[in-house]
Length: 263
Image (cartoon, one colour):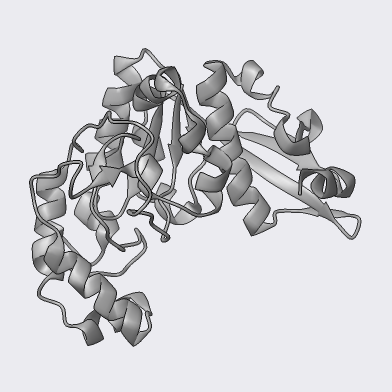
């Protein structure tokens, strides 16, 4: 089983990493091509492209200009520890032991607009480049055309390397659009998380993002490798609802009482 998650806008490069282990990302030569093109953009260009304030635009222009190879622990950080935000709050990789990190390396992948597909311990340098950014580049009008089949081909390689028959999609729609489902050599499963509010069950973004991280951690720490085992996920009050699930979508619900108890 291979699990996909999205990256995060919020980054933490100040807190020391909880592990000395690290790897190099597979597609740094592609990342470098994007960086070269991004370096040609002015703060005003970046602000307009990414809908950022002047301050954030300046910050990210500086990040592009500071980006340089080779990556080392002194100028970069493992992706799963550098990304912050709701998904990574649920994942809580800072609590992983060595076995968890080792397992995650071949069973968890992070989609990225700049890096393509990352293993958890792949080093990254600070950046902001969301997959949906309409950045015109030498390969096309946006990042989906830039990455084309590269990400999907790599996913298939990683599935084959672990003899995995299942791909669990815990990424956002924006990022999963970089994957070509018809070319995948695996059964695609997409979990959906609904929380009860005012008596109604609905997808609430904050809770759903954190639940994706919780499930990713559950898969890693319990070495989940079947769909049946995945339906046993019951962290933070979520329960599998078979009546609202099918072969492609697994629905998990959490009552208002469970939401309150989980806070």
